[in-house]
Image (cartoon, rainbow, N blue to C red; front, side, top):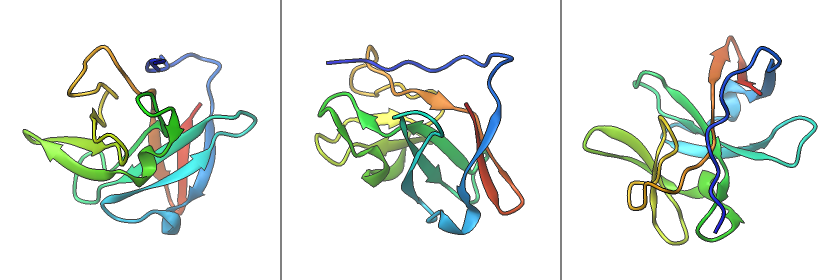
Length: 122
């Protein structure tokens, strides 16, 4: 099994537009490609929370499939999580750590909504 880790911010990373705000589905996920890479990102939109949008790796390290965006969004002890739709592991949206196995992580990205654009720092 491979483990992804958070990408630390670097001066060379820039903001890129992933999609329009209207492409997001409240309390759910959508998948997007990072420009110029083969990396899929799961965008999770949780209106009413701070922050209200999260970006984590769409690749599930347990099943080796790109399915995280199709998972169920919820919370565990008040912390936002996404449950993998295949084997049901929960990943914290703040840092990508798997609740059931803390040695496994999803990559996370800084993400923001700028007007009508959803942007990621990559």
